[in-house]
Amino acid sequence: MTPRKTKPMRTSLLLASTAAVAATTLATAVPATANAATKATTKISFKASTTSSAMLTVTGKLTATGATVPAGLPLTLQCLPVIKGMPWYTLAPRRGVNAPVTQAGGAFTFKGTTGCAHGMFRVRFAGNAQLAPATSAPVRDTRINAMVVGWKVSPLKVRKGGYVTFSGTLKQDPKPGKYVAFKGQRVYLLIKYKGAQEWKRFARPKTDSKGRFSGRWRLYKNASFAYLYYGDKSHYYDSPQKATNVSVR
Image (cartoon, rainbow, N blue to C red; front, side):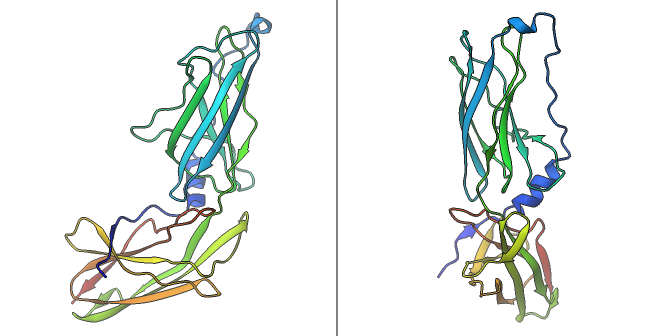
């Protein structure tokens, strides 16, 4: 079977979210004023859904008591990681993706790439001269994180026509931060020969009762290797941040 072309993706969503916490948390953009009591009270409600490839879709509405919410009001989407002690941080839009803004009447949507496994999402409105600030109730990200540990490629130098072996262990954390073996899952092994532009799948071992998987490949020229767990209806994907290079002597 000719392997399908694919591209490796970034690593564990939990790790990626933790790194993003370096971003500063949102401060209320509107200072207190003497006429704050005259501003219309506002409220934000929303729903969030994610995919295994970390695509996030948010739909919601900003409402105001006794006032009409106009189009174009900027909103901020935030995430709270499951890791104890971490603060809320702003999810900065990726290139080509706009931050959420209201439509006439207050409805808003957001689609982008993000991950906050087991964590919380919320939406904030900074307020303006007519409308008071508001922060939504938090919505939990129900997807489970998955992570390969002990990924090993050996040897890193091989004679032409020699075999390279691969191994690792796939784990999941149904209880946040408590990783256990994830059995019965396909982990795809990927190769990209030197000079090639795209990755190809060459094996798809299934994890055993302890989450372990392995494989091997006969190599005739320099190549890079990686793995990819695609995720499923309740789990995020995982792949290494950096490929492993093997040279042929």
